[in-house]
Length: 407
Image (cartoon, rainbow, N blue to C red):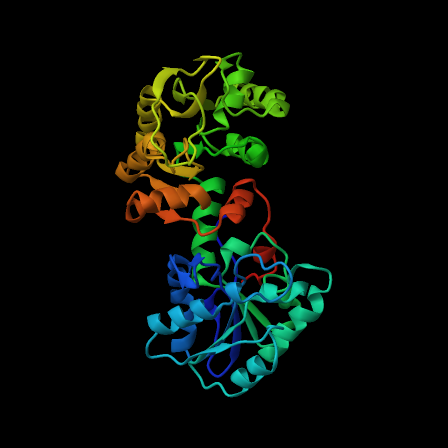
């Protein structure tokens, strides 16, 4: 998987051709206003390249999870409007059709000149996007661009075999990945397949179950695996520690024992928290003031709950990062939405910001934390895909990557 050998936008000759691009414009909205346009910004290099080379660019994306067909609050219009603001010299038309490929889309595409953009309505307005009937929808999307070119640039959706991510490739002559996909595959792929060593992987977040295969796969690839967040308590219990009322996945205790044994057998280090910030209960609301004390991780009082890694652990984890040449981080170290319980996540983010290693943040909450804390520009790569980056780290082949032509 490492070393990208897919056709990229660089390899295409697109002048005068219609190009369908699957982007990830699944942006957060509040009252119809975009609160963070990172995903639109991330798609710009691919869009600009196609526009500058004289393509007629048709963009499609999903947004949110509309339940029963079209819902106004999930319209892609705000994203299309923002794109028009970011590309003031380019004609951007929003084709508002409940069926996505309706009369408005067909008319807009027919009227396009070279270097212009049409943005289609939310692909999920078509219930067929992710069902067996997706084939008909995929063909309509391809027909809209006369079956000429499809560019996949939505890494965040690449783990789903949907009409607009994979299905459409059956009906077009040329396929390629965009710059964003290229960057994701190179960073995540190379980090896992051919890392510069020492390679340190950091996993956090709440549940062991979410990361079963990631833990097993990374143990085979990395030199040190750091485990924090809620999932650490299941490992600590597996070692015989007392974890109080901390989050635990009792069904996964044997799995944790297996992983600890696997690490020993492979000569890999698993680092678990040695001390923990505990409180009487989970903060409610989540950002409310809370008083915590620091205790040994294996001796959490019966009526207390671990909610963040402790100060000694922060130093140990930071030290492990300092000597690394490649670091992959997925999942916070504690309840980072709470200022008191964000200290572990901040310490890890700070250690990553200060290292010369290649640092890769695997989407989701870790990406949000790094951005909120102001460390984004210090990281080598922040993945735009939560679920997709996790599946990539598991060693899975992503459907939206697999369907793109090889060079």
